[in-house]
Length: 336
Ligand code: UT7
Image (cartoon, rainbow, N blue to C red; front, side, top):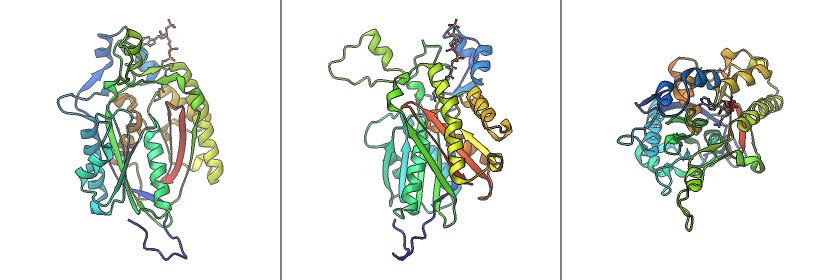
């Protein structure tokens, strides 16, 4: 849907979040459950990650697609809009159950957003961030007025439950937001990538012509991660990109109400808070219950914050930041 503004005056603002929604599978996997599968224990996982439980998909009930649709429907309902207003649907996803058509087209159909263009984005954990930033640019350009942005992951399909270094971290779920153009909406973002450092997190497709299913290849088709390298990258780059963003928007960190970070590890979030010299209370967390849900983690947390009455009526200043495989990372600042 294009802007109805006169050509001499571009008045399209950035998008304001007017609706949020999420879906978490009913099945819960505890640290004690994991201790029966691999050599680990509740104390180690809790101390090193902050995770106690994670929701995991039920193969009889949940697919990435069904979770994306559930979250999207909730966000559209929360926004209280006519779905025909939506001009763009983006689904951020690294673990789709179908490769094509794009999940965003299933979401479009399910929410009756019949006027929307659709595409999916694979940017691993910062997928939602990347999709949000993309949608904001479509809105600001006047290409669309309203966008639905979804992050959905069925990561446990790709978790190697023989690898204690990764299987303790991940959970499944989906979250979504609806953005609508508002003339005075404040927003800015910085996105970064370092493909040359990408080897520390990768997962190969099982569908590769000519590849023999050796033990080595089988392992490569699960989530593989050098945890310490990713940890060091996150605690170094996330505070830096947030500081750069705050510098660019001329905002004092003290004036930010919430720093909403990708829920990957409690110690990473604590380290970022320390580096930014901000109280940990300004860093909402749900990692204890959800684990790392990759591109779904931020919209799931936003929905939880809304339900707790923590999000305002456009008067809360927030910084959202995420990082992950790629390596990819970035941050945006807005009011919510
Ligand atoms: O979405 C973004 C992607 N990922 C991340 O953000 C992950 C970032 N990294 C991390 O969160 C952490 O590096 C982990 C939680 C993955 C690992 O924590 P760590 O403090 O970096 O542990 P480590 O890999 O240095 O391992 C320390 C010890 C090792 O034993 P030794 O060699 O010291 O005897 C590991 O073998 O802990 C052992 N270990 C475990 N022990 C019990 C590794 N995993 C486990 C486990 N339970 N699950």
